[in-house]
Image 1 (cartoon, one colour):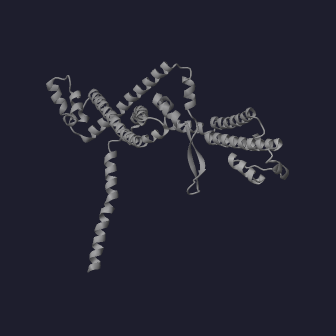
Image 2: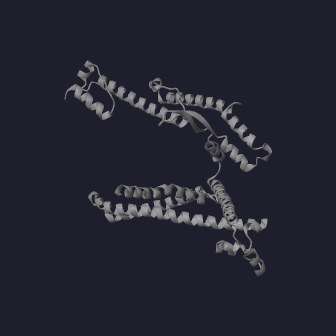
Image 3: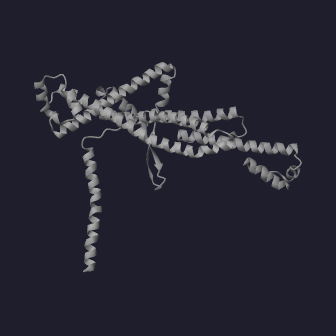
Length: 367
């Protein structure tokens, strides 16, 4: 094999562009130690340059800002020095960002001022404070639209509370953290029930129908433990005629029932979707498991083992799907459904009118 072909083969195997002088190229087939050392240095330098470039690129994408570092500046250093140089650049970028965000004229101060102009300071409670923390964490930045190539504004995240939250729980035991998470989830479910209760009672009030026309389970719970005369009088009242105590009770009942329906619907839909995927995967496994015989393995044993693992994965996916969907379910406003139906009717009206117009034009042509 010629020296140039040997060099190309080494370059292809290492996926690294290699260069040798004429004298080094002549000594390559003989396995010269000096030539080997030159190749090792070139390969090592190229791999280090690639690793440093990818590392800097990943950090810049995470920070959404340039580190102003060139990989060639760090290529001759060892990895400890490379790490120190990158961390120094990261700290510089973060310090500049902190100074910009926390300055009196910075975006965070402007967000707080805008919010306080809308909401007086004395009326800010815990829920309003959460809104303020959420609103002050976002800002805008000038950006170029990739499709239209026009200048515009892009919504960006100014403050990420995830790392601060991590510092609050880093010293908690697993049991204490589990209890805190469960308490938070239970409190969230109670808040969701309250939201659904308000929404459903508002629908009932707007409909202006008596209590006797609401769903039987909610109606029976509402009039339970009441004397027959009081229950009969309560069934004839509309939403506007109920007292504050009766409204609160009916709202709680409606919210609890609606949340139970959401949980039931979510569980059934998640199981249905994932079960179909599971059956499809099991069928694919049944078809492909016969190839295990070529590897001197019992197909039946492999099918049982893999099937058991897939079923455990199914149960885990069901838990994850149910939890994520329940807490992301968005309630609809009372008039939202009717508005969507009217919008759909408006969109389909021209489509229905088009065939009629075409038929009229065809009749004119025939005449």
